[in-house]
Length: 125
Image (tube, rainbow, N blue to C red; front, side, top):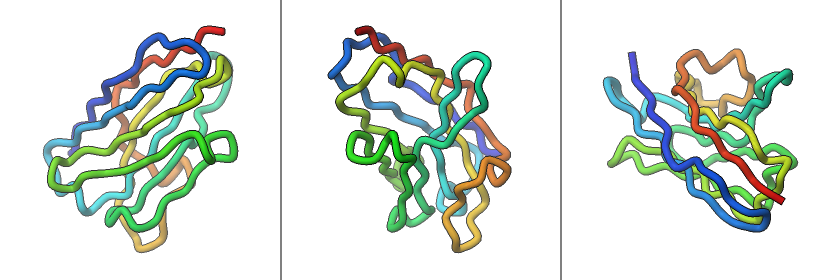
């Protein structure tokens, strides 16, 4: 099974930026769509952004559109989430996940069955 390890979280002031990374090991990275999700206590995990195995198709949650950018480098088995203009409501644990590619970009939570350990993002006002 592919192992996913996130990094790049931390504490940042509102309006600042962070870049999250997710390194995959133990499988063929190109066989998976990749997603970023986030979760706060008492709330369901929600999709932030997703990227198809090829990198040619992406999807963003409404709150991420225009501020966040998801990319991947298949030569490095790594996906990234560049987060700009961060807001206090972006505070959450951010998770990287993979979904076996089918040709249609995976957007539903149930499509993702392999998760990283999460990285905390805290945005102060």
